[in-house]
Length: 226
Image (tube, rainbow, N blue to C red; front, top):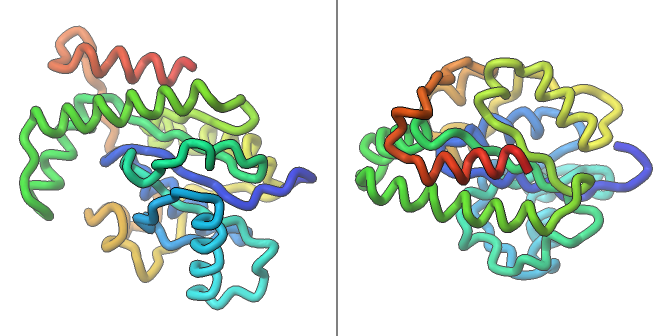
């Protein structure tokens, strides 16, 4: 990391945005530590410090002050205090995916692993989350926040990972191959792909004109063009 010390990174995504994939890539870097998707509720700066301490103690890290704490957050309820994003030592990567594959994947995931979500419920979740992420992006500077289309992450991983490295002022690169952890497949993405240890290109080319989700596409395009 460069002169401005980054202590915290939030991967702000939505369900099926590949936030677990990006989090695994970040946590495979020697400077970073985390618990996957911790499901912590960040109501204060104290909770940030508590989660970093808890994570590094659990990982038995001896380099407390050198490690960057990473968490992925996919739900609005986990960040009730928006002032937490104004910390100068916290950076935000917003990761998003078009609505058609996102909603389809949410329904497939919940059908297999949880109580099934309907199309309407999945669409509403996506709409609400995108609206939240747009408002968050409006509050943050380009130095604090980077927006990534996760379709580009799997289609052109080297380009996107270099972009993330530049944003985080990293002196050594991120790699498209990553480690698996004791939380892999249980915290965050429960699918088989996350256990592969590498980026898998499963992106879908969608004809926007035939999309069932025109309002959600407007939100998606607004966010990635901010």
